[in-house]
Image 1 (tube, one colour):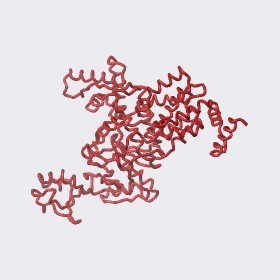
Image 2 (tube, rainbow, N blue to C red):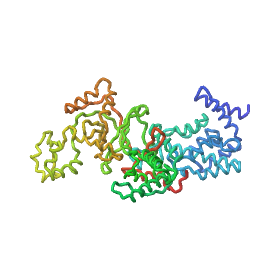
Image 3 (cartoon, rainbow, N blue to C red):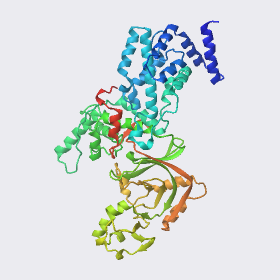
Image 4 (cartoon, rainbow, N blue to C red):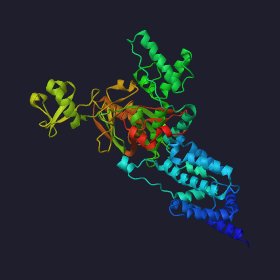
Length: 544
């Protein structure tokens, strides 16, 4: 019996131990392994064995493959899977990653070199280079490239749970290397929509890294200033690839402006207002980097539950997901730059209908005491109560002129009602920041595009719909009508959930929509620049 037949039987036995059936694809791959000359395999084995040549992953995976190449075929050409993987690396920006991380210039040179000189050493160097990049790219699309133990310690150091040597070998034998590689990405619906949208964005937009200043239109602007504003807006829309030239008709301009507004989370009113002018003054590469940062941050989260609430601070949205299907969406108001809404994971335990609002010390000291010193009737006029050891104290008994945060030993509480800061209902979930979801009497804020107005809590539009959804999960225990009745009677009532609802609050300035587009939002908390510098350290060298 020949050595090749013995090797074939050995490989067949290995595969059979994992599966009762060996696929046609696996058999073809085994034949490919056998087809390589013993000289090439010996040369590859020697190349891998060189001191400090490559990592243990490289040595292990080639040993598993009997020191046959993964990406080059027996004709000394880049194989089909080699070409597919090379194209993935050349288009790594579709995944929010800098192409220069993957030595694409060297890769192009080695592919060209192999085409010109079909030698063992050319094939080996190219094959090993691609394998090295496979391991790097696999880590990058699964757990990201940022060291979260340094940048975000609360996420800890993340490690890939899979053995990439075994993963590559098994997918190679199975004939689905690229499919399995891309399966390493987060499977969250929000991530998948954003990644697909970013790939489309790159086909439709040039990543220009220069900006045009656009001035907002103002009602009292002169005719000359108005003409200047719309001329600047046209130039910017050309830069952003929303219109072909600044000579388009007014209707084409307005259609382009409206599409731009939709894709930047702005009201599509076709007016160059303050927020639209600010967005137009950005550039496509800046927006691309926002999407790349959002893809990176999605890799920092573990898999979430089958059913959960997701709040994206930067997009001012609260979403219900069940089995990765979006079921319900609410507008929200979030914290200001100085009172940032925190990112956290928790679960709603109970809701309170017609709640009191116990004022946090920070708000009491910074806002309400100064107002009361100026106007001793301010608190009573706004339905506040003073409590000491749980008992209500008359406002008139306090010498407000001599009160300060240091000697104020009262609890300050606002009565329930339509003027209460929490509105008619609040939703409690444990967290060290003492934030929660709640209604608000300031409904007009939901009409604004940009909504960072709170002290850190999340104000929810249509909060009773939120209660309705949560109570529907409780079976017959509670009904939404009982909540409405409690509010109508102006009675405080706490409703404890039997099935706590997971809550995840995050900060992503880009998201994908159902139509395959990316929508961009302002970095209101200025969190993104540092991450952009880590992911794209030298923007001028990035290749598309």
